[in-house]
Every structure is written in C-alpha cells, then in structure tokens.
Length: 102
Image (cartoon, rainbow, N blue to C red; front, side, top):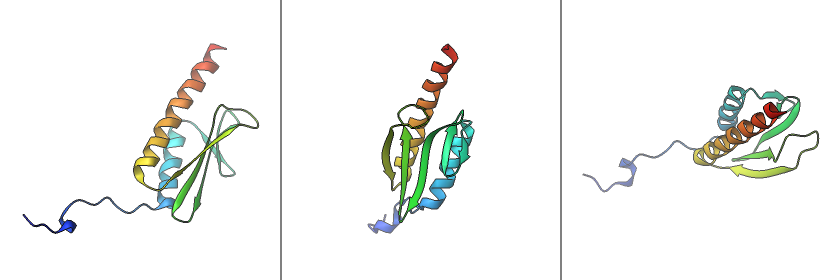
C-alpha cells in the first residue's frame, strides 16, 4: 500500500455547464418544459438555472404561480446538484398531488 494521496479515488472536477445539462435532463424527465432559461410546470416557471463562473446558480419556486417567490441556492459540486434535483422531484410530486385533488 502506498501513502500517496493520488492513489485514492477522486471525484471528477465539477463543470457547471455539464451539471446544467444533467439538471435539464432530470427536469425534462419530470415533464418540465424549458423556455427562456426557466423550466415550467403547466406554463408556470418553477426552476431557473444559470452558469456563473465555477458555480451553477439555481432558483426554485416555493409554489407555482405567474410571479413565484424564489428560493436561491448554488451548486459547486455533484452532491449539491443531486440534493437539488431530489428536492425538485419532491416539490413537483407535491404540486401534482395538489392539482389532482382539484
């Protein structure tokens, strides 16, 4: 066994443009449509994502509306992106349940 730290597994470096593409695929799987940089659920913007330097700036609506209140977060690694996608999945599920009850 070597004590060289480079022998250990290192995750790939975070690339925000690739991460945005991953996010877009995950959101399309949730039936969200991309329009003008925002992802919409039934014509209401619910997620916005933009690349700023080495960060992926993310906004998610508290609930769908024409002028939603946004919660802001940044993703600078893959774990944060996965947590954000999981959070959006839970929200979309909750929003769809509420819509089905109407």
